[in-house]
Image 1 (cartoon, rainbow, N blue to C red):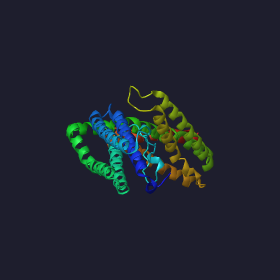
Image 2 (image 1 turned 180 degrees about the vertical axis):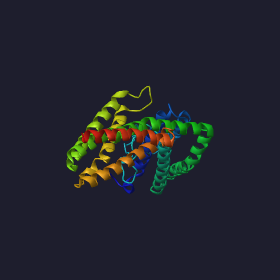
Image 3 (image 1 turned 135 degrees about the vertical axis):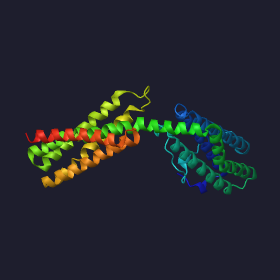
Image 4 (image 1 turned 90 degrees about the vertical axis):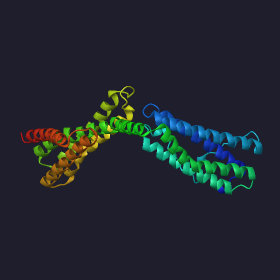
Length: 318
């Protein structure tokens, strides 16, 4: 990587062209990613992509006048000091807040670049264009706000926020909740059955570890293979499977780890307390995201957990 202070005027212009081309592609990618679920906001980013394309055209015209037809390939990652943005295709599904924060960061970074670039050149025409672009980038936030007001009125914004929440619930909360419930509840029986049957913390820990990891693998594959998300809108199957499998394992490990305590009854009491906390978290998630009344959520989860716990105790003492 090179320091920005080492760049020539030709290289600065080439970098500016590359930046505008990349920003144009990023905004276009955002618009494409939002078009299905948030069409109004997608239109805003399409307009912003067009503005970046106009900047690129003006920069190329000036470059041709000053330095000819060949534009060196100089990119952000070749120069120290730029923020490394995660590619849009790696952060899908896109959320409204996520892309707006990304756009704000990009505009601030581009504004600082043009101001620094303007101070690095003595050519009047280059300074003028860079200064004009800096002013336009400074106004972009106001332009974006106006575009939002024009294309995303309050009622549409409310609808998009609701859609954003639905997408989050479908693609993250539901698989995570399914995994957490399975890991926290289904592993109760084998863990506590082993604990009461053996009377030894280590034996219960080994059974719990095996049950948690095994359940995580099983639930992860089951969620990933349930559907590809193309019709249900539940997102990438690999991501859902990973979320579900991880939460299943964590749910089982929560009340498995206390059995690392050598004193059996102490470990048993701590594990029971962890189970209560796990069931409370599940009830809260069901109330917060699944619109289940709090009392009903607590009753359903608590009753199911109690049944599985009792099954393990009865089998372990038989």
